[in-house]
Every structure is written in structure tokens, then in C-alpha cells.
Amino acid sequence: MQSANLSAKSFRNIGLIGRPDKSSVVETLSLIHDHLLHLGLHPVFDQETAALVPDNNTQSVSRSLLGEVVDLVIVVGGDGSLLHAARALVRHNTPVIGVNRGRLGFLTDIKPSEVIFKLDQVLQGHFQLDRRFLLEMEVRSKGETIYDAIALNDVVLHSGRSVHMIDFELNIDGQYVYRQHSDGLIVSTPTGSTAYALSGGGPILHPGMDAIALVPMHPHTLSSRPIVVSGHSEIKLTIRENRVLPMVSADGQNSISLNVGDTVHIRKHPFKLNLLHPPGYDFYMACRTKLGWNQDFDSFQQQDDA
Image (cartoon, rainbow, N blue to C red; front, side, top):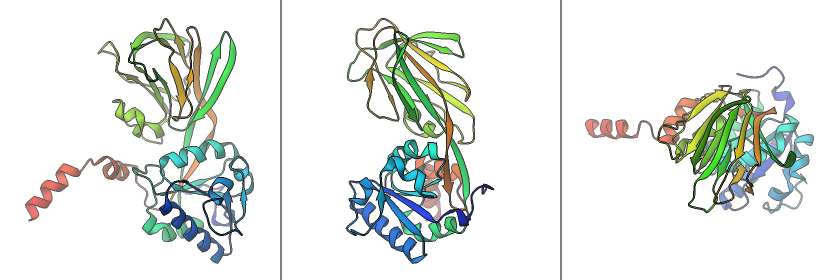
């Protein structure tokens, strides 16, 4: 469904971001760049991506400024590439579309073989707008904020390389929930529910849900199960007595160490990511394809047909 604030006329300056370590990404970026020029549009690379492309006449700006000067950003790579772009672009309310040159591709859902056709559809104003919320994390030590970050997928409390469990306390909206010994806790958005949280046994949340999933990682108490709470919840983690120093990260970015008594505060970020999909996007079809839900059924059906 198209937003009333976005139309084909909105997309004149097009940002391009790509994953730096794959030659296939460079091929797709060059193809898109040339096609945009042919359409009379104005492609702009972020500086890291511009270094990949052999054409010295390409225009580029820093990734932190890209959202200010373009109307749409095309990310070529995997979901990780889109995560990095999302954190830089979300404050500018810049819409993003993803071309999959990675593995699963829940967020980067356009196939490279269809990129020109699908991109033309979007540029002509035919797209589905998918607004995804992020989490913001704040780490406090002795009452002072020492670190903050944002995450599209998840905030993860973990034990680093240690084999010892973490001792922490969970509070939601000021209410005590439990004190737990486990390998950590995954605090996930609906977007992140098909990522790390899924491998930890968490539920799959539809992207349209206003909810946060809390998934314990190998808890000492087997009755500790994932919890789904309101997207407006305020989550607080307090580090208790530990044999090791736990760590926390947002979207797998650099982890920072936590001391006993430190607190991690997690809440919804005030800005949302405007993710665009070409016509025909279907979340459940993506689950069937990416997670292999129909794999056994399809194989049996093929044997019967034979």
C-alpha cells in the first residue's frame, strides 16, 4: 500500500549503498547506476560504496549525510547491509529498498535477476510501504549514561566468549519480572524475530505488530520462556553478581562490557524505517521461501508427481 507522502515524483535523487566485499554487488550497483542515468535521475553513492565502482565520475557523500540529499536509497547486499543503512538513514525518514546479494534476504527482497523491472515499478510509484520500528538502547553506570545505540533487529545481552552464565534482573514498565541465570537475553523487534531471536527459539512476529519479544538464551530454569510485550514497553536489565563481565550489543555492533550494578534501558526509537517493497510482496511467502516451511511437502509432492 502506497503512502500519501510518497510518489514517483518524490524519487529524483537516488542513493546507492553496497556491501564492500562481493564482486556481484559491484555488478548490480553499476547496472542500477547506469539505468538511473538513462531514466534522467540523479544517483548518489555513499563514499564507502563509491570506492567500489570503477567510474570516477560518480557523485558521493558520506553515509551520515546521504539521507539528507536523496529521496530514496537502494541497498545492494544482504540484510546486514540494510541494517547498517537503516541506522544511518532512519532519522532522515528516507525510504529504503533492498536488492538481495546476501543469503536469506528478509529485508533485501528484490532478486538481482529482476532488479530493473522491480526498481522501475517502485520509481513509477507502485510499491508497498512497510514502516518498521527500531529499538534504542542506553547503558547506565552509577546513574550516568556511558553508551547508547539503536537497533533494527535486536539488543542482545550475552556472555561474550565465557562459558559461564549471566546473573541479571529484568524489569518491564517498572515492574519486576524475574532474576535469571542464562547465557543472555535477546530483546527483538518484529523485524528481528526472523533473525537471531528465531535461532534462540523465539516467536515469529508479523512486521506490522507493535510488540517486542524477549527471548532467554539457554536459561538455567527450563520454565523460562520467551515473552512478548507491548512495543511501548520500557525494558530494564540490571547486572547482578557475575563470575564474568557480561556484554551488550545492538544489531551485532561492537559489544561493550557491563559491570555489576550497570543497567541497560531499552525502548522504542522515536523514528521508523520506511522500507519499500515492489508490488506482490508477501511476508508469509518470504517465510515459506527463506525458512523452508514447504520443503518437505514439496519434495513429497514431486515424488508423487513422478
